[in-house]
Length: 425
Image (tube, rainbow, N blue to C red; front, side, top):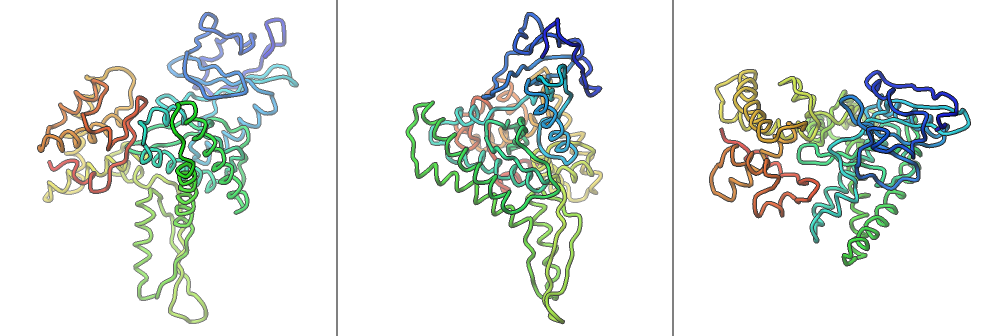
């Protein structure tokens, strides 16, 4: 950016980012410090550009200085991703000065997020199961990108942040310099992205092991990288398969829709067409929409807007509440769950852990910790014990192995049977 004697910078900001106008834009971003701007000291991934995280208004923002053409290109890519519902940071503005110089790209800072390296470094030795969960999230993320026509180009996990969403992880793209948004991708483009991801993942695992002075099992690294590709292929096939079956078994189409719903995908339309000339076989084609099936269902029932992973946990809790009240209608059960279960628990969490928090995520954690404590005690210990553990910033003894406890978060995904046993009343 130009210095104070240079041209006046041009600011293009979303209305929500208007407090940023007060920042010292005539100074180069590299010169910003806590003494001259509301710069925050936060851990950042490796970047060849100057990056600053600042607090302005009631929000936190990430600022990255790069050549103007690159900043404008990345801003356009992020904006296109936002419109397509891609899990990426939201663009908030551009600050430019000299047409041939640099610009500052502004995005909303992803609070409550963790770098990939930090997440894996915090896992205990032998945390293969939990690394697999991280890598599964990456595979699902790449499928989401490709379904929306996004060619990543540089599938580096250093360009991702991870947020907790219920008991799963949601990657978030934070660097889209090489990304291209197209109407659709060819098989070759998808394979190219996947190959780059495998190479970068393998290199990252080896580098991290060396950094932490941990022994390296090359065969295990290869298996983990192949596991990402296998999970990607499995999910892609599930979303694009066109199974055939006899017309008399056409209700199998309903089961196929349910299978996609279990994966979190909403289905907008199904098509059954005959195979061949006058045969009895039909082919099923599904038009798959967004990966927010459970979130949409929870919003329909309760009005709550949460993440897909959080919605899966909450719907399981609501289902358990309903099973204990067979005489009540669905609206009555939903109202009872909201008023007698969810809201009182959230109030206890808010009182025990004040400050800005994702209380829905806290409630998902409460359910998990309560179940683990109850398993250890051989009885239902209730919410208060679980709230106390969460407020203390810990998890019960023996739970780390199941949850995959890290200093950053608790990473885990309970089985369906675990979710069904959450509550009995």
